[in-house]
Length: 358
Image 1 (cartoon, rainbow, N blue to C red):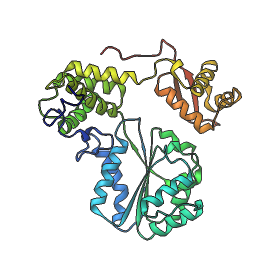
Image 2 (spheres, one colour):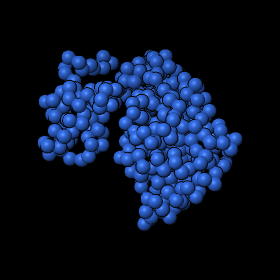
Image 3 (tube, one colour):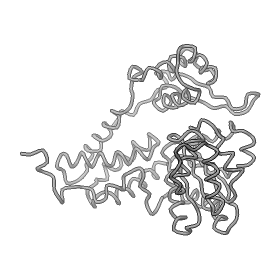
Image 4 (cartoon, one colour):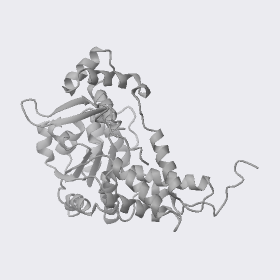
């Protein structure tokens, strides 16, 4: 029997697997109607030939920030052809030059090679100031500098700028010249509740999976785990993996065992021990462990003294990953003589929690 002899039409439990992709934006985005309306209200003046408003979109990972904005901008595309819609992921494009280069590509100017930063922005001004633009800068806290933001706010006329971050406090560290020009609406995306998580996964399951092919017990288990992990994107992944597990076992429906298999697979990708970390991350962890309760800036200096590599921004990214993995906590304290301060602490065994009950 060949490796692919059992493949063929009619055997899949999926009716539209694409509905579980992270890039997929459903026609209805539940539980984010208020946030979408507020975002749309910032853009609406552009449709009337006026200056748009800006917004800071904040909330923890996996709560629909990017999906909600993509839904709003998709509606805008249907409403007007006279507004550029620019989306930049600042994790991937973190410098002013790279951001300007990406914007040029998106507005239709492809000849960016050998252009200086100033030349790129002149091209952007020439294009955008003849129309209007909505800028979405996702993961804005990952940028290495804010020069691009000052230029856009200062020299482009009709625009709305959306800054998306996990941290509301990010704005506190931005230069006053930018903050005064930005004056954003603050739009919060709180974590989904248990019932909301279940509702979203049910909606996606209805779009992606054949009717009656997903047991309520399996869906409840996946929703519970996704809720406890506070990440709806994980839920999409689990739905797909549970379906694939059912297909692999030649089952006609996704049952509880398939849901447990998907959760177990998701756990395999988590780093469980510091020995599994890359060397630089181990150095960061050792510094935090030795000087737990210290300020992020002070610990960065100690990290560099111990032959650590990279800039402070690189150090921050490693801190964020260690926090997500549950090794450390990073608590931001606002106010005082030093402004915003981040305190790093090691997570002890007593503080650590696991979700191995499934």
